[in-house]
Length: 265
Length: 159
Image (cartoon, rainbow over all chains, first blue to last red; front, top):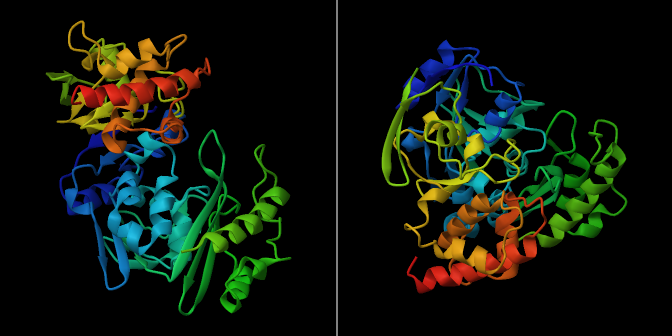
């Protein structure tokens, strides 16, 4: 790990000021992605801004058919939340599939979404559930938030404060994971709303999480796994690696989407 | 160098450290508590699991400075003198270890598992919950038996 200067702000305003002042710095929440990256010397932040004292950024609220999860809420909390399980069971299940128990004890929703790892789980939920990402400056729709590989619409000094998820009629997340890293090789999130179905895919796209318009149209007309018979995503633009090549990932997307439709509740 | 203070196994400790110091380095190198192991150093294997404020975490993926003010328990903090913690005793009874390298992490994970999931653990739950702990001897069968027995013994001792 390269050397850095450590800061421990006690207010969101101070954290944002520090993040804005140190453009080569990084904020740390659970650190489940940032620390491994720093240990491999793939990241060399000049400053580390520790958000762990910002207790106002923890908590879950369900109101007016919207689940709002504050940024520093840990995966273990979301996975076990009775409110989330009742409102959007797929979201609690997704949180319970991230990493392993020790990782879920530290990792946060804000960190996962801000990092936008192309194989992370939460970005798919944000996109399929048409979530809004709230920051200390503005509110951003998920469709505009995930820009590319590890890239988001967040500006300098802009910190996620909460993410709000509209409650769907039905939803499900199916993850085909790498058993060693526990990241998604392909993860498919399907959400059925009164005005249509949204389908997102993580783990497969070479520029990160994406929606599948073709699947959404077919499922909006007929919410049954058979509606996806014969449909597939083109393998070009999908990741190929030692775990799965692009053609295999393309095949998995349809398989996992069908499973998600069948399991949706 | 910044100062970090925390409680480790019930004892207050404080030291000036390089900000890069990981919790596992602080425990092993500064405090000489070498029961916590480093297996993979990439958050996969779980040999370094300790409890921070009651939560099982991977100490190789935790900055010591972020634990300011925290209460940390390591494998050294479980036994009372010569009397093993019931989970430690269960690992011994059930031959839940071969080389023993992964054992401290397995036991710390298992103790927290019991706190979250209760004392009556089925095999499926135990295997799911041990997902973040790897045993290179692949002695999982006896580890699972040990955790189930340890969980019951913890209930009997009111833990």
